[in-house]
Length: 390
Ligand SMILES: *Cc1c(COP(=O)(O)O)cnc(C)c1O
Image (cartoon, rainbow, N blue to C red; front, side, top):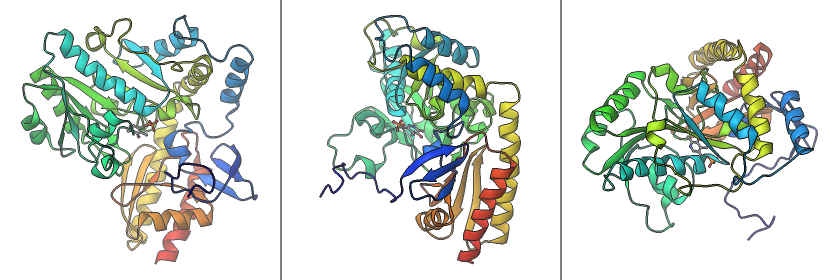
């Protein structure tokens, strides 16, 4: 039943990666792979980035863990960088995306509690979304297949179709606390929100006195070519969850919030033993140094434009393989004609990693440091697979 002693919740491919450099991974059997999965949008600066390796090694020689009962200077530095670069006034650090989204939900409820409206605790969320695997974040997404068999669904979430502003308005009632959205649905199939939709949600939140919550766990930290994906729409949320790319592969999550939204998060209302530990903060600071350096995001946008153009060209030439190209920046999706799993299996056999997503999509989320050479290599692998399909 448990041949490798591991809880068999993952459908794993039989490969062991031993080392990596940039966008390339080396397997124990000697094979090389072009990594356009990035550990599911995590290895934002690729593998073995010298600055990240040095930051982690240096901190490892000093201090690993320090309780949040004491000051952690790295947290103050990373918080300052994130606050200065965003709508937010304050940051909280945790370890994972689901943990970040749990706090996003808690802040929304607590905000209305302190405003004298404890009955306003419900959150309007979108179908097709993904917010993590905890009891509350599963309920927030409302995906039946992930909830099945895990008992009563946590109360307090209403679901409306992603992209449907009228449905969001109609779902708002006297118990509504907040609206929750991913600016680009990742797991759901790389579905970018129309900027007008996000602006409409912002306006609805303001009209009804709600908080606008965003899940930028996957889209944040440069993935779409902006530091945060909501910047493309010109509006900002009140509270936002981050994780994946922030640590470049070291587990770190964060919640950013405005002063108004977080005013009631007083001592004792939340906590996290490992959150923002010195190792995580050393790496996150180095990641931000790189991604916020002048020119970095411009390069992401231009390499993304190059890649997208070539993908669209492939889709035109191989209509029996690729039905549609979508996404934003380096968060791209190919809706494939054959099963996405069959497509990624062929890519893997050829030597390239990509990740499946909902709606029969093959997700391409390469490290943000890729250049023309990696784009050429990826298009070569993809073209080979498309040609096999016909
Ligand atoms: C991955 C993801 C999460 C969950 O992150 P974990 O670190 O796996 O808990 C939440 N929201 C979005 C949008 C994600 O892509």
